[in-house]
Image 1 (cartoon, rainbow, N blue to C red):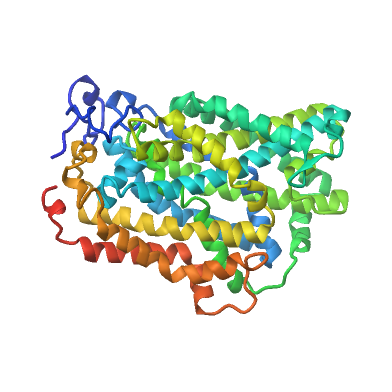
Image 2: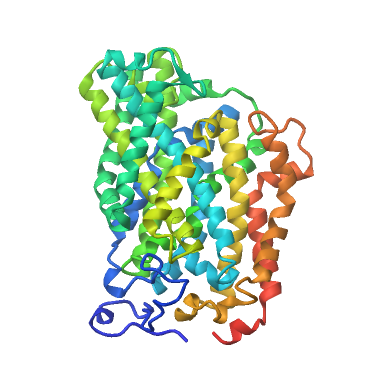
Length: 507
């Protein structure tokens, strides 16, 4: 039985807001970080949600995403349409999973308890956390290289730090910049989610302004935007047919935010209303991703005309300027971009996910520190070793896991339970959502079966330099649609296995 919000806070809250009034603080599944947000804590406006997405989308990996599609053989407008379509597709599960966060004030791992069980929820939570750790490492590495470039420009002796000594084939000064950026983020972790709201809100205008300024500069120096876009054809390194590249590129575009489509309740649990989360996401995600990817393509094309060579990395482009003021501004934008994305997309979720393993011993801050450590151990410089590996192995590969989990969650909440949850039961170890010893075997079977068909294709892609198999077979083609395949199978199989289950009748 759900309990509607009551009291003064409820007077101004949407009717479907639900607040927990039973005391479950003694449960081993409860801590203050995982506890449902109160009505008073749900303060994020439409602008806060939109700014969150602007802050997460304006980042170097978005800047370089379309370039990877063009390298494979697309032209610039095909790459833009693919990115727009992929982000529009992923917006649908994003908004659907966000609903429970706003209505019940619960985070992703707590919501997973309804479908996977009070203990089984750790399976999707840890899978999501591991992907976030990888992303945390990637974004930290990029942010560190930006600092490395700035220090090298402002201090001529920086490049000689440590002499010619290298660790893992990487210079000591690069390591120093990397760990400096890593340390700054660790300090911010202790500020919590409210600090992230302010970070995103204040950084969004800077990021939008910085991107626009970069585009204007590139078009001016290269002789006009039309000439720049014409020159983008020179970025093509392969001459593949569009329809050959499109499936994998679309899946990669969906996979880019497939992670957030699961743990979006971690943020929308603070939203003022369902309208705020829906409109904020619709305004902030697809258009920002497409616009910043377009800036990446246009500026990279412009560098061919300006410098005679393509410079796809904005950090490398920054080194071409002689003005310290320009370099400082560029570094500030890149720093804000990497910081805002990492703090929101790659810290909040794994912090909650690791906390869910043992709520009594692992707090949000402890979970964040675990994330920061694992992010280094996953060797992000290897994950970013090539565009092909990044898109066709990393993005498409983990999208298979996220798709299966998303299909199960949406089927459970929207189709089977019809948006009805018992909030107190989510925190009871032996309650309605404990199933068999805390595990819902039906969800675990649906997940395993959904992922199985794309495993052979992933293994082949991971073993192939660049991630693209020369002579693809049936499983390779299936793998290019990984997120769609696993989402559909997971949704359907979970529905068949769970339809009529006793926990649904009690809802």
